[in-house]
Image (cartoon, rainbow, N blue to C red; front, side, top):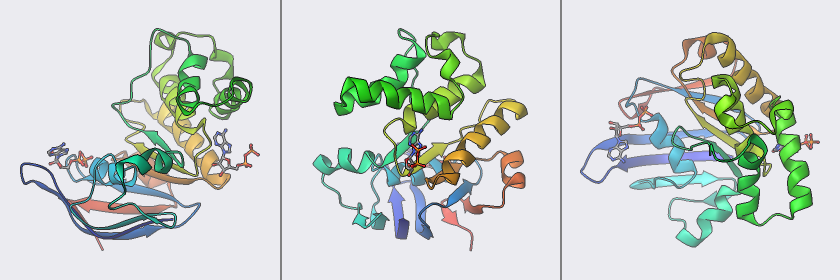
Length: 217
Ligand code: ADP
Ligand code: ADP
């Protein structure tokens, strides 16, 4: 499903963030990426969505080699992906429902099916009773569940989350992990970058360890 072959990433300025990364994740697998801050976890996940591009090597998502994907093809790649990154802001000028609706509006979805999709996504993350709430009134865990609902509302086959439990208490972190597990259980491929020991200790899934841009054997 996701296949990295000898991938290097050197940022403008010369810093080599990733060195000779080779791994694959199967369709429907849930996998973790861990390592210290600066190890390259975000860079690696961003390359799957073509937010960052590799300097060399090949990246396959599904059957497609996305290493040299044309700019115009990137939106099609992202239709298969649900992205949960720190820099994605919740919009505070509209309610929970409208925040989750936004990606479907951007894609031009028909508004009646879109509303049903939004409710289905809110239901999956346990936020249906908060659809009219302003996001500012949500707890940390609820805000993160809103971000997950927004990321899955277009029914992606791959879900990618960067430090989804950062700044959450243990109880909330467990809830968030249960949400990811539920998507994994219906066949979604889930990739999570984390240095949360609690998550890593509790999992039976594969854990890839990055150290200064290199993947441990
Ligand atoms: P992690 O997610 O494991 O904390 P990152 O992928 O964010 O690691 O960063 C890996 C390395 O690449 C760090 O040294 C970071 O400073 C550097 N880096 C990240 N983004 C950029 C960028 N846009 N330009 C230059 N260097 C970057
Ligand atoms: P449903 O609960 O609608 O029957 P399925 O079990 O048929 O869902 O899942 C099929 C695909 O739909 C999965 O690959 C997954 O990507 C996606 N999916 C399931 N539920 C949701 C949801 N609430 N939001 C987004 N995508 C979902």
